[in-house]
Image (cartoon, helix red, strand yellow):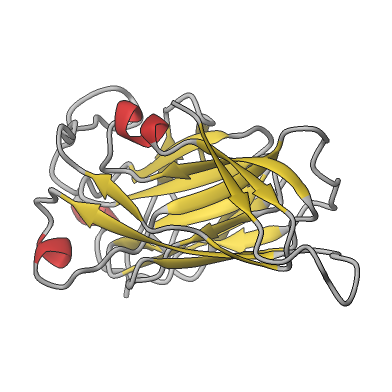
Length: 233
């Protein structure tokens, strides 16, 4: 179901509206994650606006960074615009091999040593799930969007999107531990007519989510890390 939120508090404005600031907060429910249950960590939810009656403004390709450190991808969730080039620097004293074999964008940047970096240009919108071909527990998500108006929630669940001009937008959300049906439930239409927009709180349920084990880039189960890939002296 698509809901229409009319965001308007006063039709009298001292100056023409050039771009609004949209604020909101998201809470995660029914989670099995300790960081959510105990720490109330609601970070990592991506929120974005797609204009309904116009095309998003064009922009020159940007850059972003997803670091590999302590056998983790940082940030774990990265939202970018289409055309962005993402650098994957290896800040560990060991080898890494970031890859994705999901339909969002398939890539494999190969094995590379500590202190070096590789880059990937993300050319179409979609959800890209990133893994390391050596370390099975390393994972991340890159959300590639064909809009400049997006944000990722902080630990408190708050988000802020700056810049959308007056008009109607489709608001969408992505959370890696929510089902497609749950995410679709939060899609709605937002009409922006005022400089500051405060959205009602959203609650995203993780109920029904089942984590799926992944294979290596060759489509096979992971093996023990070879000695030659471990600490580099």
